[in-house]
Length: 526
Image 1 (cartoon, rainbow, N blue to C red):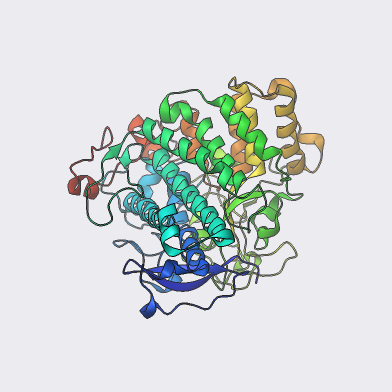
Image 2 (cartoon, rainbow, N blue to C red):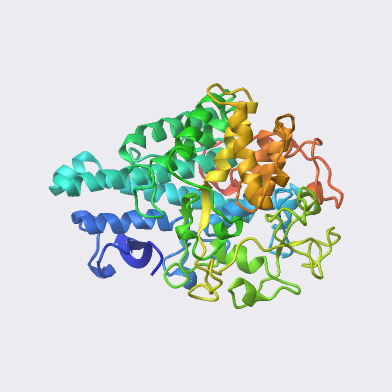
C-alpha cells in the first residue's frame, strides 16, 4: 500500500469521528461501541488514531468516506470536503479556472458577485472551524496535565508531545486559511470551554500574530525536515507556512515581513528537497515519492475515498473529446477549464507546463456552461509515472501538493524584488531559471536579470502553480484581484472582464453565524 493513512473508526466526545492509522502502526479498527473520550487516549495507538483524524479532516468529508454521513450539514458531502471547498475559493474566483455546472451559486465565484448567504462560502467557513475544533480537542487531551494523569512517560510521552505539535500545526494551517479568506473570524483554542458558547471575534492583524507565534513555538518541537512519515508535518511544513504568512504580511497585518519570508524560504531550500526532474510527475498517482513535495494532502483510491480532493480535480477536468482512461479514471464530469488569460501566458509549443487539451475546445469562453469553451487542463492524473492506473478508477491515488519547492524558489525571488534583506538578486534569477529550464527542457526559456520583475514573477507563478490553490492570494497581494489593473474573461460577470469591488478581497462571514453570535461583526460591504 502506497499511502500513509487508512480508515478506521473512533468515537470521541460522543461524536463519531473518522480516524486512521499509518501503514507502520499495526492496529485493528476500534469498535465504536467501546470507545469514549475517557479511554480513547489511554494508549499511544489511540492518540495516533485521533491525530490521523485531524489530518483526514483535510481530505475526507465525513464518517464513511464518499458513502455519506458528512461532518458538516447543509451541503452535498463532496462540495463540503475541505480541499474541494478551498480549491473553489482560490481558483474559481480567478483567471485560472471556470466550472460549467449550475450548482446553486457556484458561478458567482467567477463573477465575484457572492454574498453572505452563499452555501459554498459557508461550507468552507464551517469546514475550517470544524477542523480547528478537532485540533483543539486533541491539543486539550495531550496537555502535560493529561499525560501525567494517564501515566505516559519516556518515549511514548515524547511521541505524544510531537503529535501535539502536529495538531497545533494543522490548527495554524486552518487559522491561516481563515485569516486569508475571511479576515476577522471567531477565535477558539484549547483553553476555551467545550460545548455551546459564543466565541469572540479576532481581527485579522491579531490573528496574523497568533498564527506566527504558534508556528514559531512549535518549530523546535516538530520532527526535523524530511524525517517524519510522509504526509505528516515536520519543521519544513512550519517553515513553509511561515514563509507564506510573511510574504502576505502587508495584506494581513500592514507590516513588511519580506526579510522574514526570505529566512524561511532559505530554510526550506537548504533542507534537501530537489526539483522533480519532470514537471508532470508532481501531479501523478505516485507523487508520494516525488522529491519536491514538502507537505501534501494525501489520497488513496482504496482507503481515502471522497468526492472532493483530487477525485474532484481530476474527474471534473475531463470532458469533451478527452478520453477518461488516459487520466486513469472511469469517467469525466465535464466541468473545469481555464481561461485565455492563463493560456496566453505560456509559450504553448515550448513550455511543458502548458498541459492544455485543445482538441474540440475553444480558447475563448462564450458560454461558461459549455465544456468546449475554454481549454481543458491535463495537469492532474490518476496515472503513475510509469503509466499505470491508480488503484481505483473512481477514486484517485494522487496527492495534492500543498507546499512544494518550486513555489519557494519563486517566493524567494519575489521577496528579494520587494526589498527583503538577506537575499541575492543573482540567486533569485538562478532559482527562476532552474524552474524554467525544467519547463523548457533546456536553457532556451531562461531569462536575463533585467527581465526578472515582480510582474514577471506573478506570471511565472501562474505558469508554474496553476490549479494548486495559490492564485487568489497571489492576485490580492499584487493588487490585481478586484481592481482594473488586471481583468480576465468573466471577471465581474462580463465576458471580456471588468473590475469589481474591493470588498471581494475577503469573503463574508456566513450570515447564519453572524445572526447566531452577537460577538461577530460582518466584514465590510456584505
